[in-house]
Length: 360
Image 1: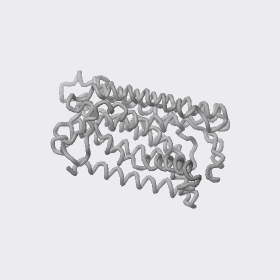
Image 2: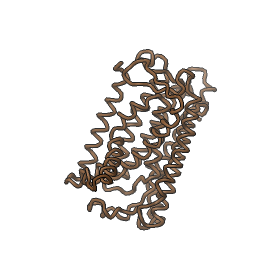
Image 3: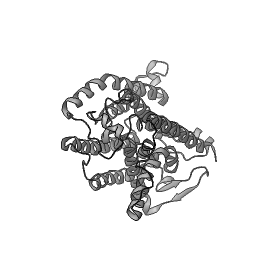
Image 4: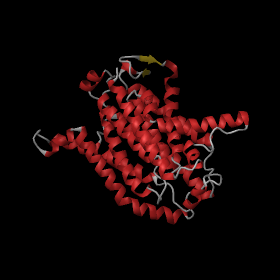
C-alpha cells in the first residue's frame, strides 16, 4: 500500500524511500513486531476466557507437559494478523507472488483454526481427522502449484532447479504439481509436528523465513542471479517483505511463547507458517535447498514416519517417543536444552542453505 506513495515522488523526497524493498522490509518487520506487542495481551486474555481448559495435553506425553494444562492455544492468529497487516501495508499489491503466499498462509491457517477449535471444544487431542486436513491441504497446494507454474518465466515452468550445479534444471512434466503439493503440505505438517515445546517451532520458522527471504531477494535481481549463477525469477524480491513481517510477528509471539508459554501457536500457526515457507521455496525455485534450511522440520517429520512404520512392522520403537524432540525429553534433556539445541541446529542448516547460493 505504501509503495503507491512513490507515484507522488520526484525522486528526492521521503516517498522515494518506499521504492526500496529493503526499506519496506524493515518497516514491515517493525510493524509486525509492534502489532504482536499491542495485540498479544488482549488476544491471550480472550483465548483464556473462551477456551477454559486450554489446549488438551496428550496423556502419553512427557510428564513435564502436564503442568502446561490450561494454556490457551490458537496463538498463531497473532502471527498471521501481524504478517498479513505488514505485508499488505508494505508489499507491492500488484505482485502475484505476494497474494499467492498470503492466500496459502491464510488458507492453511483456517484449516489449523478449525482443527484447534475442534480440539478445544471436545476437550481432547483428536481434532479434525487427519485425512480431512491433508485433503484440504493438498487442494490448496495444488491450486498454489498451478498459479506458480503459470506465473514463473516460461523457461522455468515445471522445472526443478538443482542446487550447487549452475543452470541445471530437471523438467518434471506431469509430476510438477504433485511435487509442489508434497513440498507445501509436507512443510505445513512438518512444522506442525515440530510445535511441541515452548518456543521450539517459532525460532526455526523465523530463521528459515529470514533465509528464504534473502534467497527471494537475490533471485529477484538480475545482478545477483548473474553473479551467483542462480535462476532469475522476476518479482520474488517482494517476498522479503513477507519474510520480514513473519520474523517480526514471530518475535512478537515468542515474547509470550517463551518458557513457560502463556499461549501456544496451535495448528492455526504451525500449519500456516509451514505452508507459507514451502510456498516461498516453490516460488523461488529452491525446493531442494528448502529441505536443507528446514532440516529440523524434516527430521521431526521423518522421526514420526520411521517410528510408525517400524512399529507396525516389528511392534518395537526406534525412538522413546516421536516426534524426535520428545525422544530427547524422555532421555532426560530439560525442555530448554532441547529447544535451544534445536535452534542452534536450525541456524547451522540455514547457513548451509545460504552457502549453496555461492557454491556452484
